[in-house]
Amino acid sequence: MSLLKSRRLWFTAAVSATLVAGAIGATSSGAATAPAAALAAAPTSPPASYPNPGVVTGNTGAHDPSAVKTPAGGYIVAYTGANIQLKTSTDRTAWRNAGAAFPAGASWTLPYTGGSNQLWAPDISYHNGTYYMYYAASTFGSNHSGIFLATSGTGASGSWTNKGLVIETTTSSSYNAIDPNLEVDASGAWWLSFGSFWTGIKLIQLNPSTGLRADTTVRSIAQRTGSSTAIEAPYIFRHGGYYYLWVSFDLCCRGASSTYRVMVGRSASITGPYTDRNGTAMTSGGGTQVLATHGAIHGPGHQAVLADNDGEVLFYHYYSNSGASYLGINLIGYDSAGWPFVY
Image (cartoon, rainbow, N blue to C red; front, side, top):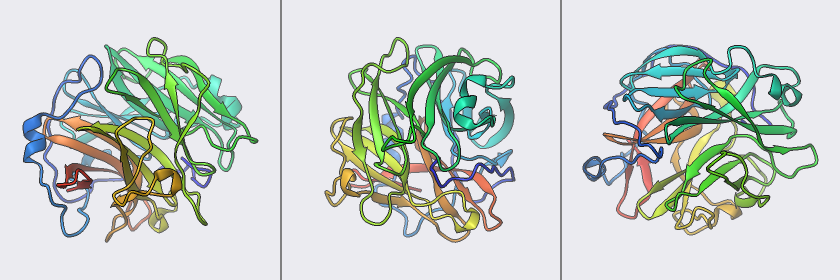
């Protein structure tokens, strides 16, 4: 979420178009990868125009979604809402509401939320038999914010245990501690990207044994330049020999007037430098557009990537003409130069 984001959530019905659903078990490390055969079968040329989201049914209202594959082959989506909201699916198509992560509330976040129970932008993943969820607590328009960690053995409502504050920012900070995303690099090191607006996207190293900070270093990995500082929702995903940094540019949470769009850059190192297709550094405003408003799909963004048995999958939210916010899902392909697109 950004300093410009509204806390309103919309809960509505299903979307159109097609998507093949699938299931693989999560690995013990949480670093599942799509099967080589599925990646090889993916198209290498993007469609002529942006595709509509794939078919999802049931309870599909969501904002700032993040997804994880369970060891049993199902799916959990966590998203912004009262005490963090959860949805589950057995097939990645039909979704049901699954309650709040913290049904009794999250009192430890109240100093950051001004007493509100609205918690933002959870990042859910599975590592070594445990579900990890990083999430943000803040108030609209403020960078007095905190990112917290909770863990669970099942991922279910009421099973999450508070593990404490990971990083916080104050009103004098030049960046904002929101929109967290955990990535485990090729060597097994843990990293958390986060941030929004101001001086952009940051990266800190975590201690894998605790999930909390490993040191005091804060690295800058992406920032807008020029008249707009609107960048947020980082998600780092390793594909081939690169780490791809997915971000959202521009403005969320304005219903059908939202201008969110999904951008990407890549680096051979998780710490950067990340550059776009043209070679522009993401710290200098670079980013290659992957998805943007088209037709009745408005402001797609706050993306997350999941490896599944039919390939890599992009989860995101978007707005309908009515201003309602929905869960969007598409498959990801890569062109001959290794740049991603959705189909």
